[in-house]
Length: 198
Image (cartoon, rainbow, N blue to C red; front, side, top):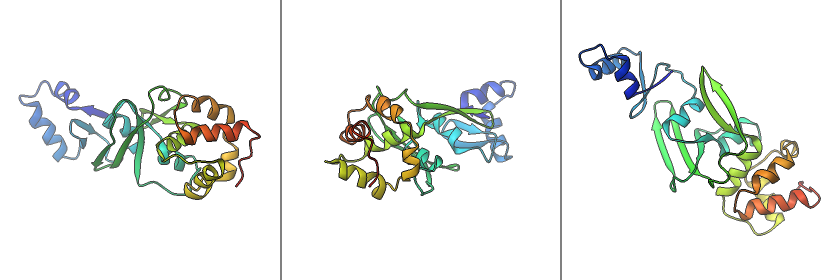
């Protein structure tokens, strides 16, 4: 379970000094600081479930979600999430790992999210289609369909079979909420014959 400092002060309201009680519980190994003002009672809390509470509103996306779905071969060392209207990147180094946050357009933010849960703690993760769009959005724009295919399959190392299994209608629908050269080219590729091989 996760607790804010305020939650803990209420929980320990009957103690003379709730702040000292919090410190004592940390020393005893009953509470584990995540970031300033946020604690977990589980030493092995799932990092995915911590991410939206460290900084939000946010959802798991980008290379973290792409790796989770097997679209890219690499296992990511940090948890990367999407935010909106923050206008800057954020990074938090915590005992539970590194958490990074990047903006996506507010118009695109609410689409293509899946509700998940880890040990009773809810969080949201981008669908495979949404995670790919988010990743393409933050990358430098390419100039042609050939360059887009190189970006997808050579640079990002997207698995081609997994890519073919993505929902084309969702990619086009979600993609319409971004202003991105890469995503415009992706939609063009999908809607003009669907030739997605290198």
